[in-house]
Image (cartoon, rainbow, N blue to C red):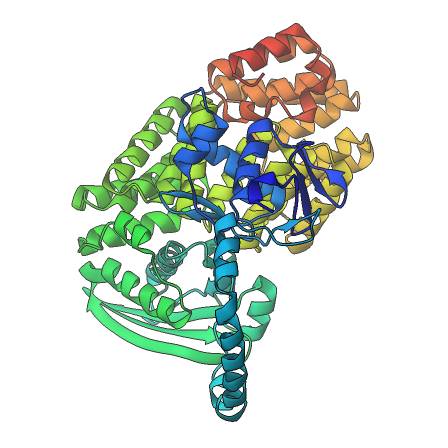
Length: 624
């Protein structure tokens, strides 16, 4: 049967009915947009063959000129629906710069055979006489293999197929000087970044937050492997003396704790970027991971850097990872010093973009929010002008477009570009999950945040934010359970107490709610976000005096230069005071308050949703 005549295909656990335009799994229909369905149909019918982007655009949008991002977005949707993973594709394989290929075995439901193009069937028919001789020869080969192949089959076990998981443990600081921890920590983070960019569809690297929890030696390699789900561990040490740096590293296979590779290097500090690349390539050879020609061509070659500038950069990353206002301020100082000493390193600008972006997301930012976000944008664009393959800079740019500009299409384009360049970048998955939930794409947001959690399993904030996606999806019981799991790991994590209290509010469990929100306020030392959540709880439970006191305090802080507009609106919404809530929501809109991005899905604003003013606000934000 010719491929194009087939009407029903089966692959994996899925059934694709062309005539009825249905995709089913276990007899349950799966919702697909018409364009996504057409793309899947074309790929399945061309199974095993490259379908170029141009062919897909012509067939799916025959009478319209559309941007390639429309195709990328639909491919992304199909992968999510199918539970596919770009890093270890089971269904849709990306052919860099060209198009896509459907790689899963496909079966014709009616005939019970695997479809193949007519030319393949014809070629098979022509080859049948030869097949007899090949089968006979195969018997001889089998006998020879039984006699002489034993030694070959019992070599060292091959590297596993599919995606490999690796963790870079914190490199030990051998200087004996704790003030140099920033250097060893920074080198660890840079090695994580370097390895994660090598061949992301093959190699996934555990993110920094989880890796750094193993700073103090003590746990066995097999225990670390079990906790993180990795097959390989890279560990090492750093000794710095003046302008020279000595690195020792070793790669360990978790399964049998075999030391696969070990090496020491000594270089001038100015050559540290080339050193990181050299180490990553050596590891790649051991685990059969290497850059594709396309990946190699889009990466800037390593360059010598000013040693003091690089030290400033690592100091900046050290303080940025503290994720506090003071930490961001110090990070910005160090990144700017690094750029002043050596303005040719794109990662210095990417670091500056990260720092300004998160600084601008704070309610009590040291500089005006608009200024912080514009500086973040400029730094990210500068980094990308130097090296467009930096996923980190694309992610920072997406953050600005989402949190400040509310330019949703551009934000998603940048997130998708970042994830195309580095599917192993946990922060991109994490922030993209918030974009998706802001767009009310609930299931996609949950898949994205769980991908971030897979890459950074010990990150408290990501574990907590899995609960946030569940809460914003109104799956309150699951959100409550997720918060409890987070608090089992850190009972003092105020953001988990705050989210747990919000979920209790929505389920009207007021005593538990008040307890959690009070713990959040105390644990955060009066952080305004937590105070606002407590105010909403007091208001919902009709504790009018306490709610009024909290509103007055937030208004006082707002008058002193902090942006508490959104927090005040939250209290008034929970209190049932719609007019006051809209006054403060309009002010939050005017200031482009970052929390406004969740307006469409945040349950705390449910009392306002039927008001025409709410619809108008969503329209102004392009969220309707």
